[in-house]
Length: 244
Image (cartoon, rainbow, N blue to C red; front, side):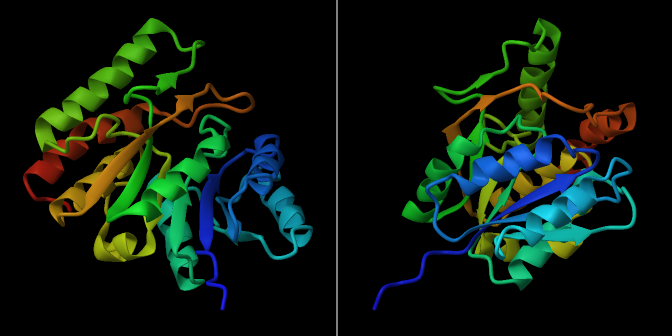
């Protein structure tokens, strides 16, 4: 009897990503990963991304799903909703990935194989391990801010993860259940830090594989001042047990 391949679900939150989403869906469909599915979590995008996602789903033969949300209330909430749906639908591996093509789909096979090879709970697509890099288009001050953010988070929380703010991750379903998703409070980019912190607090293992992080091609960045402030405060809240 041939053992079924693990069900791998890529969760992609979207807000005004109608140009990028079909490109990403095509890249994922071409990957040599059996039983790979895409779940689009659209926050009522005014540019019609939700309708684009519905068309992709209708044409996919069951490999693309869409979760429509009525309001835009943050990246973390969108990921939590998508992860919950993926677990409910039997995912063995859940991958979180941005829709803006900054995360290389080509890294997914290595992330999944690394995840399933041992006792790893989550694999990060990392800019800051040997072989990893950021986009050449990034100005020096943006690269410096990213490096500082990782130093800052690790100095406060001691995660021991080189790319602690990474948003490209492959999770074992059991790890997501273990970290108690319904109680995760962080929302913006600090969501990534809280998720890592919960993994480490429960004695689970994080591994990193190198990626090249690219600049988005279409659309606008979702980083606001409010998100930056939340991200700066979150490690201190976690450190003093107000969250996590």
